[in-house]
Length: 130
Image (cartoon, rainbow, N blue to C red; front, side, top):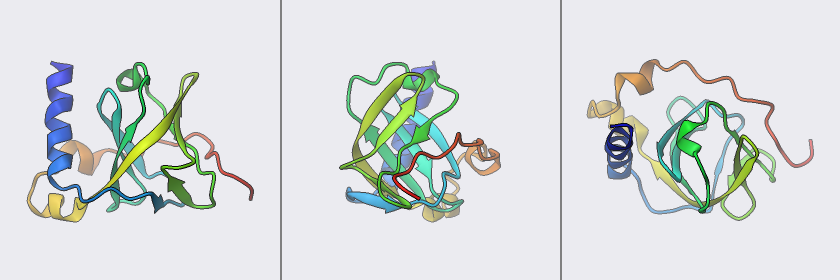
């Protein structure tokens, strides 16, 4: 049932996703949501969401309770350099798709869960340099 739920979530975000990008700006992670074994949605702000795929193997991502997204370049998340880190795993980012989250909200396709979810407190952000 969990997998079906994830598949539904993934389809919902994919419908509003645009062409892949190499990077996106992020000062700090607003929140995140796993939508498949290798996929998660990362909000860089309350309105800016990105559907991120990580390379396999990335085991048990769907069971994790905390993720950190590395930021090798200041205030950017990059497909070339960055990883999703949880537990003792570093999963390289493989694809980044911007999601038109505002349109999703407007169409009523964003779950209440998304809207009401209080931001998960991110662990200390990992970034290159200060």
